[in-house]
Image (cartoon, rainbow, N blue to C red; front, side, top):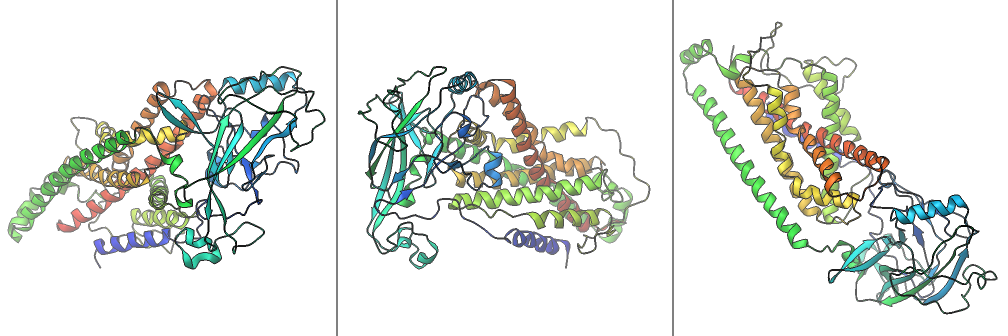
Length: 570
């Protein structure tokens, strides 16, 4: 079995291992059917602002508390990293039951600290985030003749719940999974044999009014406000004052909609300017595909011509040629010499395989409408890192026995060969190599950054998956070309350079993040917010460096192994 076959089996093993583990579906990926009068669970998320990017708990402000007390919902690691904190709320909705002038609570008189904090949160444009049936509340604002969608609102009392009536008694038929009725839950006291409603939309209208504080003193929670509450949409008529309480009321209206349950996320996924978005991505893909094709063709022709010319020679000519070696053939006894800091390199490659595998699986499942399993990549990291360690040290396991190593096709001399002086610093070329992989990302990067920091919904995961595949291809090609160039000038220290040739794209992404902070996040205020932004950006580019660097290193390792296996040099 040659190296190429072993490499294919190795890659297949990685793919199979990455599929192990238990999985769960994206919250809200199965329908809940309610009958009239069923209670709906309304939850609140962290307060967020595009000016500070620092989330705060909903109950950090003097809002009404639920009568049963505050309870945290289960969170995963991704929610924690994004600052989400989902808790129960005092709002009570009953399916298809309209309610108006519902009194929620009256806070105690605002202390000086509470008043100052509330004013600061208002000035910093913090938004309230409410969730119903796993749908975040969405609001509409009119701008330049069209409506802009937002998740989150400044303050509001008017909720509108869009519901779709289903006559089918089998909820599974809603999703086209008629044989899956047993695994799809039904909420309701009447069971699944009664037609019911499903939540397909959740809208909120920001509106504030100044309540009669004397009239609410005798009211209890969920009582009826004594007079009709009227206000204009998106207006603020209530001014908060220190040492005065704040009264909260709300109303909820249920509207039957033609929207079906599988399409309920369409309102969140629609974006103005989508044509420009798609055209920009397609243009980027075409350009990068063209450039990658040119690099690949030139590279393959150069290497193949070199190998073909050598193989056509007879034995005497090959022996004579061996005496007149030049270029990459001169480093045959040093090309597999262990690099500096081999342990660190193995760890970085192992983690890069995990991050890359997780990214591919996650984006692929997101494009299909599902979330990837949560515990992927744990075994892959140890397998790849240990195998690279044993390969670098030619089978020396040093405590690791189970992972096989890859045999080198040539022997390594004890005395390292002196690298001739170069016309230009090799690391300068390595850092410049990251510009081509960056070209596959920079257009898509704007939409990703806007989704993370501007509260916009990212939805073109299919294109993102294509961009990711192109990025992997370009990273491999760039690293291969630079490795070949270094070997041709008798520079056998290719290990780290092949890693950073493609991993240097992270440097340009970080510079783009700084550019985005200066020119696109102009409203971001304060050094704490900027530090938080740069900290998250650094973690992001670190993960990208590990993933892209791993692609470049493994591609170069395969190429060097194949190159020196094809030509027999003594």
